[in-house]
Length: 231
Image (cartoon, rainbow, N blue to C red; front, side, top):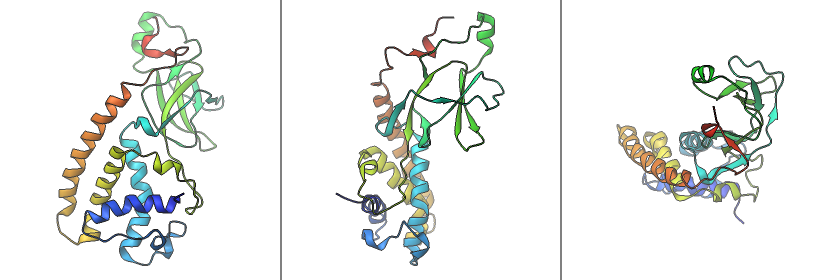
């Protein structure tokens, strides 16, 4: 089974090969101790790759990189300003896919009051323990969310996370790497602008593809989706 280091290197090399760089073997790149990467390009890719992956995960509600959590923990100590309830989001949370769904009863409003509420939830800031918070007007929320698995050991053979990535996600990560690394790898002036145009094209394709996947998602039958609540 491939290691996390090997799976990362595969994606990195896809980007480098498109910039006429021969790429690296997985043993050339030290993700565990980045300071050990003394080569200019090795240091560039190791220092920025994880941030690029997280950036791309935040851009699109990737269905195939999502999971459901319907057991969020309520935080009674979090001070909400506009919403009634606060729930701790999972530690691997990146972004929501669609809207939360609710198993509990909604807070009751008159029609006039309801119309004044522009949103029924928002992603709040962080509580005192560093947990990201979901603020809602409804109890017992569940969410589908894009998750990001981190690994303390880059030589771990738990490569499942990276092998979950489908073609459109990998292509978008590669396209972003070419934007971020273009000048550093090739030394060509203006290459970032060229790569950015290609990235935007790939981003539109990825969003279109993912929107089709979003249309296939079915809300759990016993959940109340706020868009369908009776007023």
